[in-house]
Image (cartoon, rainbow, N blue to C red; front, side):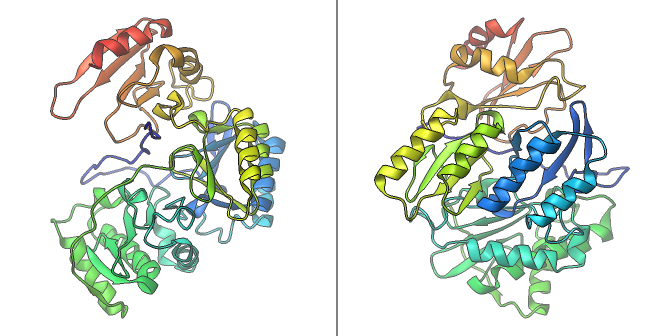
Length: 424
């Protein structure tokens, strides 16, 4: 079965040094793009009430390009925002309950198993952890110092978000405890959210002692095991009992499109939701939406009849959302490209759509980049499709244990042949 493209986890960059502070956009700190201002709205666990979803849709139509752009952390970006709309945007988000703390709005980066509590596959429903961690984050003065790129992951035991390269991961385990990384210890279930915050605050303290502008745990220049030791000491000081044990193993993919347990799952091609698609999602939802790190949406259907589920699935398909687990869209990702980015050499998203049939469903995911920055590229094995300044694309793939293979396509119409040349 084809599965969604792995999310874009940043590769390790030990001892990173930067000359400026974190400029990651937020809901209050807008980023100037070629198609207008960009706002990134943090949605812990990707969870939106129907009221919040409606509010986001109204804001996108009134102030932006009308679409909602999903990120690889289950957040939403609003693009094409008009100059000077920051105050109105903040007021609308605050009224919808999407800004519980203006001082913490950029650090509320939490991914959580999107099917938790809906399909019987997880060890534990992580919703209580999600609520508690978000509240603890917003109540921590120290946490305001986290980078907008720092990521928490709450895994219900199935191993889906545990593989996303988060800075702090809490994973449910079957003996009634939770595994904390970094720290590499077991903690009680009820202590897990606070333990995650302690781990993040310990990282902050260590980062300030060693180098400026260290944003991710992977960048911290400490000897192996040293951060684990510091976190264990801080857990002890905070009165959080912990012990060693075998680290949980096993992994899972993101939700496949279709009916999954007591939920509907839909994939969003290239993560861009039109106003009509967003309306379709809110129309079939009873209580909430769950946006996933794989640029999809999970709609709980706990109380729905079989007929209602079937009708809802057809409504999503008719709106242009992917409900077929064999769709080639699940294997394709792309940066924003032209015209949204001035650095891009091509309208990569239009080229993706034009070549989807020719490329078919390759063995490896494809990620299209408009320039060498490769914004949003996945960390897993994939085919790198890079637009060149001269026009056309350069393809490359580095199979595990093999040498890098490359090919060129003078224009998108030759993409199928170029892909066949490097994937055997």
